[in-house]
Amino acid sequence: MGFRDLQSFNLAILAKQVWRLLCDPDSLCAKVLRAKYYPDGNILNAKPKQGLECFKKGYIWRVGDGSQINIWEDPWIPTSHNLRVQSPRGPRLVTTVNELISPVDSFWDVNLVRALFWPVDAERILQIPLHHGREDTVAWHFNRSGLFSVRSAYHVQWEHKYGSRPGFDQAGGSNYMKVWDTLWKLKLPSKVKIFGWRALRGFYSDVMHVLFTCQRARAIWRYLGAWDRIQEVIAEDHSGSVILEEILRRNVMLSELNNVGFAELILTGGWYLWWERRQVVYGEAVQSFARSAMSIVVLSQNYVNATKKEAREKEGWKRPIEDFVKLNIDGSFSEETGTSATGAIIRDHTCGVVAMGQRYLSHVGDAPMSEAYACWMGFVVTTIREGFSVTTSSAVYDECLSIWMTFSSISIEHCNRDANQVAHELEKNSFIDRTSYTWADEPPSFLIATLANDVIIFHNQ
Image (cartoon, rainbow, N blue to C red; front, side):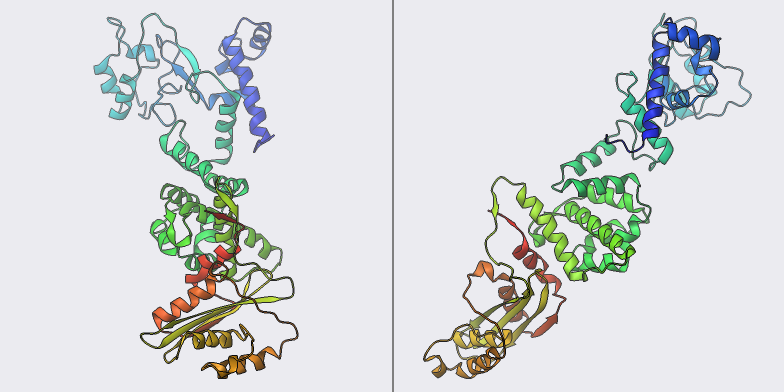
């Protein structure tokens, strides 16, 4: 049915019966119950019952003549956090609200109110409008109309039972509404939004550690390039749910991650980290930092792209079949400087990086030689045709051919730039930095977005 707590719902239903007895005191049911439980005619003074106690958490007196309202015990100040006066009673003799009303003009006795109460209470009391000839009435505070509703009573009871952060869930509060509006409008799967809602509500006790401060979480956020932004938010000592709330307010688009929203990334990453935490608890293996980071980006970007009208299935790099790996290579050549750079990456059928590398070459004769070095670096021959051995790159191709012969099953094909983005980024980075590197399993963070772009299902034109 969607209820988080059936006991709270049942108590809200019982509280509704209290409201009915107040609204229709002459009904047969009210007469029978009044004779047994509240012979003085005031149900609010009846012996404590669960439904009545639930009702008392949200009712408020609307001031009429003030004769029925106890100044110090009853809820009657709508702008007070607990609906009651904060000033201590002390030796004061005044008891009911009508004693604060001037009998001359039926308005507040301003001098008396300011003399009896703290300034904050005095201002709140004087803000309450009065109308001569009107009786005191009971209303429901957590509904703008003042009428009781089971839904609002359920939320009041649930908050009383489980608690919430002070100031976060005030009825009708603008901050409260903005946070929830932002959350539900994010471009995320429902399960991730529900995770965020539960985290904001305080369902999880160690959100701060699992999502932000543990070693694994920090490593993943660094791979994603989000750690600096997160550090700005967690600079002060806050709980994990407050951190998430602040992230929702600071949501921006991350151009370095194909315009995935910061809040979408954090909530998707949080959900993913929580899922991995469960794997660890049950003794299951988890992915490397880099693979987890790439999975988070892919999940975020796939959903964003899939929800757009112009989305289409992505064309480009395709994963190899099971038990095979795919090698992508690329090379570039500068005729002015006679230098070259190459890039190569090997991935398996799970889209995981097996190995990758980039090489800067300071002395290269021409573009074909640059491509030959790319083949050599990737241990693959890009083409075999008659007469190629007489070019300047023949020695490199001969070595590639000897390596080719060691494979039991291998094939090559030409692919366009869209299907070769990662190798292109590697050779471009090598050209810019004039560096040579190889990586095993763990790709560098600057490639995360490009790797993820190869794996996403939907493409946004």
